[in-house]
Image (cartoon, rainbow, N blue to C red; front, side, top):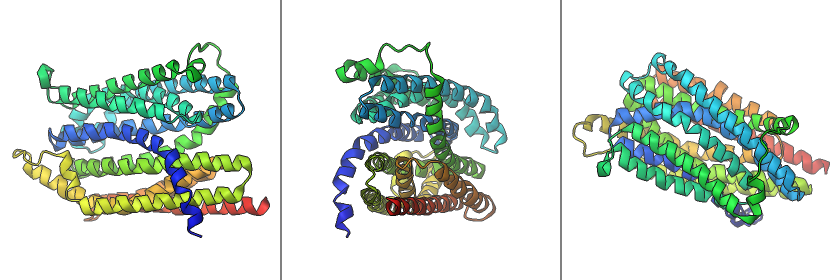
Length: 456
């Protein structure tokens, strides 16, 4: 019985590992920024957290829409129709460019909100110049996302991974030179981190386009675009497919962003601790995201073949694999909760010793909760991927809204601001929201697959 699921593990991992590495690459940019900025002090780390909170919300919408490109390209590739594949990429690039520029403009308009959100004043003043540059980096990031989804639609997951690795190298080098003023470069602090992020994302787009253009198989797809001819039907198809995914990502990212803002009300140290725990959690979450892509692809294939028993077996095998991996991550968080936060801060900095000690203590408590919600977070994202493979997007969007905003957020708000739990209370709300999402999405998958088997 158990073996029918475990025999799928090897193929599931083979399909998902390049996606996992590519997604980890994006997170590693933030990880490098946080570690280097953390050496400057807790206010700077909190400022990066506050600035990025606005960017993450916008990013979730841009990336959510771009996911529609993958199934359209995969469908065209399966039918041997290159023209449709190129059309999906072209229209996706137009939409992603428009979204990137629009979201950049919206973030700039939202800057004054920072002053009325009860955030620490010194954190806000540091965050604004950082946010301006990082917000502009959304434009190349979302354009890159269009190329990434196109590449994955052709089952070529390694090219986005290469581009992301190069971007990380560029980001780390520029961070080192510009944050600390090394080798005669100006010492720009967190603005240096923002420049590193912006330049690395421009390099990432240029490199993936160069890679695809230089490969004979893709050259025809990525060159000779006629952007004057935009078809309303193709654009509408991308929007119809992408909008529910964008909402699902938005609901989840927005509750984590709310956690950043609630932590800011508690003070800069609570916000810095929240940022450390969030950054560590987001890296393990990328493993679930990669397996979610594998679930979407494999479930979609079986749906096309109309083999619903195999579809259910493969779906459950990916859920089980994710569950086992998340238990490993949960154990690492439990055992390393007191040491992991020290990576982000200069523990020998005498001037900031009291702040740093408090941040490490608070982050260790948050990692206790994070250890448990690893499991819920991983399960909900792979089940969501499987449901996308079934082309079931509307009900899961409603489920994510209920789980995060009707269950999770009220608990975070009350426990965080009105009880002695404070930061830990905020994260207990996140745990409840993620667990509710995982349970309800699994029940949805269970219901749909049993119905498909019964009716086949």
